[in-house]
Image (cartoon, rainbow, N blue to C red; front, side, top):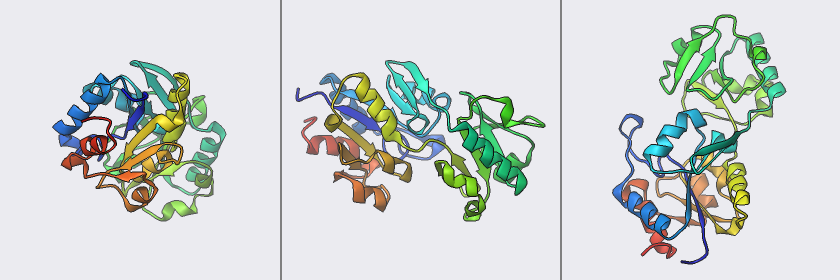
Length: 259
């Protein structure tokens, strides 16, 4: 085997294809992963999802290692090592501004598969089923000592009016609301490589969307799927085929990591 490499795969649109309710990993991708693992390479998922929302998916996909929570969660050999929350004071300031300007908000104050909202407005506005929204009347974020995510329901570009949003990382995946969440997967990638005393130049990342931009760095090999957004392709070391056209397998063949 050549020198051990550290592979990190985004999930949706990269490793898994199809709609959220009918997702699958192409057989060619499974075969590529199997061959990489047999050769002793390190394999991990790199996702913006919270650990609670991603851990079962990690196991279903056959992984033991994961960067979760947008770079702030680290799992090695099936064990969650840490999850760093968002900047607490900045979150409080943002939520206070949301209250003042009558923006609809919700929070994830812990590692659970649900969000908390002070009333029914968040679900009524978004009808979101990504995770359960639990109404806790009189919800006060100051009752919690950590905040991992904030959700703000509004249509773009209404978020531009929130001054405190500029102080925090955020991303919009749905037209009805945005996620305030950690947004630098490279932080978690570096933490894992440091844990093993590895070299960043031996890192390989695969991605397709805007929340993968942070992990496409000159320090290592970055591979964009054929179905990736253009801004990601512009940062890529290599552009492979679409995820559902054996993209992962073809890239690994191209670089000689598998035959």
